[in-house]
Length: 428
Image 1 (tube, rainbow, N blue to C red):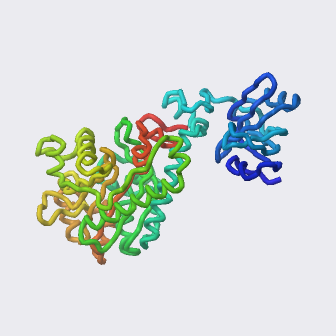
Image 2 (cartoon, rainbow, N blue to C red):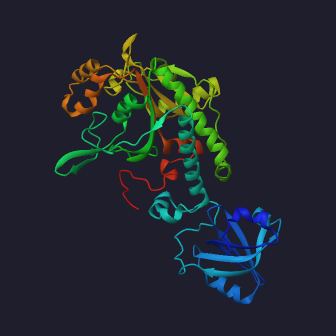
C-alpha cells in the first residue's frame, strides 16, 4: 500500500490508508488513546482503542518515527475533519530521545539560543518550518519572475583572490599556499556575465566577516543577485527590482498560504511605482544632520514610517547615496558627481536591497581605483574585461533572510534561518 500524506485523508474517507511520520503527541484517556502523527504536510489524528495497540502507543516517545495503517472516518472535531481508526502502529526506528522542548505546543517556549543549539529538531515545529517554506516560495518567485524576463541563472565562485568590496571584512583562507577569501558577493562575476548573457541572476551564499551581533546581521546569508545590461541609468534597475519583488510576494501568497496562516501573516502590496526620495531629502525626513554620510537604523525606521504615512507603502527607495559610501564600481550621478546612481530599498523601515548603476568603461575603473588609492593588480582579471566592450549596466542584491524576517515580522533574522552563522555560532 502506497503511503499518503495527512492532507490527502479528507479524500479517502472509508478507505484503508498507510501514513508515516513522527509521533507529535499522545493523549492517553481512560477508554481511548489519541496518537497525533506529523508528516511534511501536517497532522493526522489516529484513534486507538484496541488494548494491544494502546500498549504500543503508551511505549512510544515523542518524535519516534512510525507507520500507521488504518481506516479513514469523518470527524468534525479532528484535524481537517477526519481521523484514522482501527490502526496498526509500527515503529520505523528505535524510540526517539525527546527534544528539550515540546514541539506540540503552539509556540516554542525555549529561548532562541536553545532553539538554535537544537536546530535539527526545533525546525520541525510548524512555526519555524513555516518561515522556511515562505523562504522557499520567495526564491521560487524570484527565479520565475526573472526567467520570464529573459534572465539566465549563473553560478559563480565562492572562493576569490581579492575582496569584492575593497574592505577588510573578509574571511581569509589558504588556497594551496596562496591567500584567498570567501566571496563577499558575486558582484564582479555577475557584471562579467552581463558581457555574455546581458541579463543574469544568482541565488547563493555570501560571506561577511563583519563583527556585528545584531538581530539583522549574519556572517553567512543567502543573496538574491541580479545584473542587467543596456540600462539608461539606475532607474531601469529599480523598475526590474520592483517587478521582481512583486513576483516574489505573489508566489509566496500563492504557494505558502498555509505557512502564512500559521504565522498570522498577510503579504504586503508592492506598489505599481515604489516611492523614491533622494538621499539628501531622506536625511531631512529622518531628522538627520545634513552632513551624515549614511543612514543609521533609526533613520531607516523613521523613513519607513514616513513612507507608510505618506504613501501607504511598506517599500521606499532611497537614491543618490554619497559616492564616498559606495563601492568603487558605482556609477556617479552625472549631474551631481558627489552622489551616486545607486539606491537602497527599505522594507518596513529596514534596508533590504542595495543596487545601482555600475561603471562600464575601462578608463573609469582605473580612475576610480586611483582616486581611492587602490592598486589595480588585485582586480586585474575583473577590470581587464572592461577593455573588451561592456554595455551600461546595473544590478541589485536582496538579502533573503532579511526579506523573510520583515515579511513574517520576526524579531531576529535567526528565527527564519535554518542554521545561522554569525559572530558566535558555527554549529550545528
